[in-house]
Length: 398
Image (cartoon, rainbow, N blue to C red; front, side):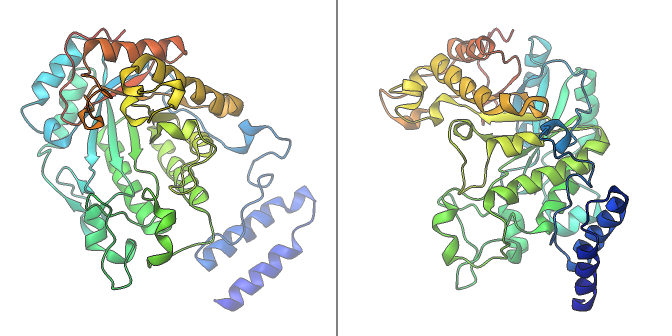
């Protein structure tokens, strides 16, 4: 293997002239070198790979919305329990009777379980499934009958089920036990390509089932990981956390876009307001470059005192959402043609854990205030989050 790599390195070095006639050979050498090494040792030259060195961002990344005629999406979060259970009837009625037109359904949930009985051998071997949605095909038929735009939510790197099944894909303490966060959840290692391919395989099956969009959540390292990684054992690479996460997003889009499905990513709302979330690896712009839709989670309850000049952001939903969207536009406007659709997650739940005086009960007025803030900042798509799928009645979703 070393001889092969050395030979290919020599071949590449001989082909690094400026002549365009060598472009195809250069690209072939790069491809063979990286393949032989089992990793990317040399990044393809953007000018060789069909890119552009003139500074035109639109040509540096080839991204095309596979569904450009899709109407504005206004949706709700639906757990697998709801999708496969009795609550689905009331959720269908909510969409039938309102301007809402989409459901984001857990296909791989927060525990890492595939939520229906998959028949794909690869997914059966690597992952774990639960029969929350007993008949996924019947569900897809129902969604189509109600003209609902189906989005498959796939939780990526927070995956307790896979960490337990394949500890070598996770983060381990020195005694060999699996690391867990304060909630008892484990993550898998974003550096491992097996983890990338597994999640993309889940997404590909969702696309075949009829989902129009794949929404990846927890596309990041664990919170506070930079403070604990030195004490953990896991496979590492030279890439930074940010480049690793951005690399997964790019790779996933390249795999999924040819299938005709959109790809979206959930991202912390504050990521639009800070330079880069280095610890968890989320760079708002780098991720946005490679998705068709970006969904910042801008729940007012998740911002602390001082954000957007608000003492208690949860008590001021309009001002908080407006401030978050202004920051989002500032981040994304400069990327021009690569700017994705902005479709935020907004709050339809009451954050009582904030304590007396710092929260209020959320209902029709508070949801409508957030929607107005989005409209006033040029955003006409959104998703409503309520973990129990109990949404406020009589909301004007226009």
